[in-house]
Image (cartoon, rainbow, N blue to C red):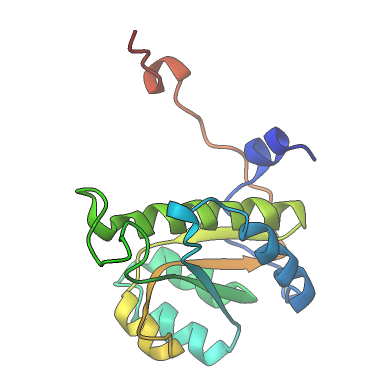
Length: 181
């Protein structure tokens, strides 16, 4: 597949086969995601993969803030990746000051780029994924024993797809694009 085909054909997958993604495949996906750009090349994104059914059920039923749509997606996925970011680096100078008025919010941008890169790389390996943001990040961090210097930004369910969703309608380019000349 070429880059544009991957971008156009990758879909959010919420139904997975029971087969776990082998560790070496996940390592290859993360190796590609590591090429995502980041603020001053800080590379703040970290990936915590878990597959324990008890942990998945606890997160799905107790920490998705009542958003039942994510409950089934997390429980049914063979594996879930907690995407985290190292605090205090992205958007922050060596002296601790912020480079711009955006403060340290650059970590969300950097982690978003890395997460999308992960999903595109996963698609290339035949692995489906869906990015989820509705959950209690602090409780998930506590349950997974995430280091205190990291913040949980997203959860990504992964596995081999058991569905082929069609692309939703996209807005017309004229609605999305403005030229300022």
